[in-house]
Length: 101
Image (tube, rainbow, N blue to C red; front, side, top):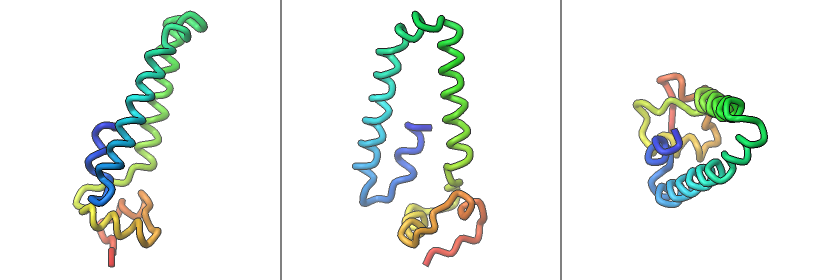
């Protein structure tokens, strides 16, 4: 989801900065995982390490499922309008009749 959403969720004026920050965060997390995986394996074992990473993935999936709004049929301008009004909530975007004035 990290790579998929980068080009879709940021309004046009900040898309470059947003996707850059998102890419830097993803690469940083990937580097941390790569640098620590052997230490974690030595500490808790191979199976437990992969179960730990599986739990991280389940937690990330649950976060995206609960917090990521459905953006189908919404323009970036509509999303930006809701952000400016302070009414950006996944629950608001679950309905089709969102008023963005």
